[in-house]
Length: 120
Image (cartoon, rainbow, N blue to C red):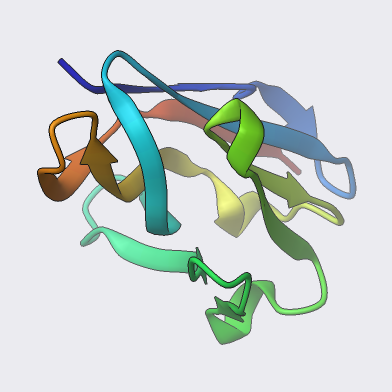
């Protein structure tokens, strides 16, 4: 059973930084394309940052220059470094990854989310 577990969410003042982590556990063989999403109260979930198997990254315009997505394939982990945080970054952040398990089956998985709150 593959699971994704996020950590690193917290309450931080505007202008501060946080680093979110997402670790895959269970019968994980490889993490393929992956990304971080966020959902603010009353809003739809949106893709914040994505990274391909080869390491190509993409960001939503509102976080470009402030957020950095990265991965550690050896640790089956995904990260989101968030700098210069703004109150509008407040949301629950979710990790999503396409994972191939040890039986060779590939599918998408979601983490349960981690709360990021930015105070003004």
